[in-house]
Length: 378
Image (tube, rainbow, N blue to C red):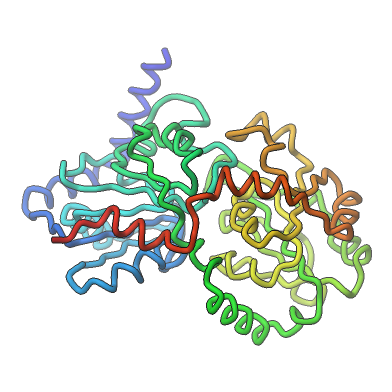
């Protein structure tokens, strides 16, 4: 029965993607592959950012490489017919294709045998389960990768499971966007830039509230803001703090609170990348977000605000016991959250164990290593 459901699901996915399949096959027959062309594809970012920005900058050092991009803000952003034609043509011509997230179009295509499809996955570490790790019937999702990168040798098996691929194709080359955490000059520049743009950050203890989304995916993502009383949080902490709000890009609903006219809060949710904000953060509040891996490089307090932990375990679950991730305090209500913010504690021994397990391949040279491993230009 499960096998039949899988066959039906795959058939329907191919029907929905038939315009792409037809156009791709057309260009595949009429164009040859360019052994020096690299294509960056994303349906969750509209500009070069994250791993893509670092890969792009590294590729630009080689004048022989042809770089193409097809970027969209979200899966709900419609593509014109001209955009679809361009996309299919560039997929047919490219030797190397990089994706950084779920990209449903590519899975329906029967790519040329010489095409390399590499998953750079936007999140590091192995926290909440993704892809095939979530169970369910087999579909076209996350199929066809010839390579994928991870942040540690010890989690290669987890990504192999998630993407239904041979573990030998998953390489612990590090995560390109983490290179900035080892760059003191970059740290100095980004701090100066943020302090100039938001002078209040210089004078306060900076809390960064960065929760991930709930729901099955990009199109139905949300966060339950009933868990927090923002007015009470402000009164509880006082004037020595400021709180940056950075919601996951998928979260479409917003709290019924006027952040713009409250000097305790600074809503930077429209900023695509979170990593720069980590340089000015004193305490991170998150939940099941992979930002805990990036923030571990700073060795500062983290609070896991998880009122729905039991429900989340049931609906999504994690690759490892939740306790393996919590090198900071765990709060299930606002009273505990305030207490832990003021406490500012961190388990240094557990943090070291955490970093050794999940982040050992990140050393400031990940971008160079990824490009040199995958791109073979003679």
